[in-house]
Image (cartoon, rainbow, N blue to C red):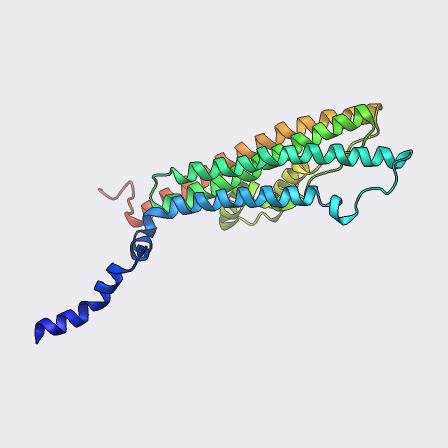
Length: 262
């Protein structure tokens, strides 16, 4: 009787073991060890999705009627500028998507524990991704400005980068939040965020073959360097804040005072 009861109770496992492709239990139970790989895979999926959306957005004038109707005079010049701009930004979309993919690959190879991975490596990866994309977009914007300065053609711009500023500014945001615990400094966050936004915003170019236009193009290339500097500063600041908080947490777990042994 006991044997029959045990067989009946074990029957779900027997059936489950015989089901084809049934490795769902191991996937769920071993999920903690696979989080780094999963997040890295999400970055890879995001890179592919970005590439598809970017190219479809850049080429959308072909099926939305965004081109200038005629090919005479100014219409031809404007259409030629749009075509060259499309070629430039479609080209740019590939190295930009590769930035996202490379960051995802680095996350997949992480051997850190789950706490360090989620609260340290992932935020730094987001800062680097946003910063590198801002720098790449700024670089191609500067190239577009240079071509426009030389040829008088308007190559247009890329997608808005406002959303990237939030991720690129994680280090400064964390530092301001930490400082705010001890002192109320409402103006500091605004100044720092506005400074980063100014450096990373799409440049405004002057007219071709003018001193103002030349200064604008030169400033656009310099802005790329400042964007990278801001990136590295944010990474260093975030590492500092994380290290400080980690030390504080460890001290709370095992407090020690210099005069404890007295």
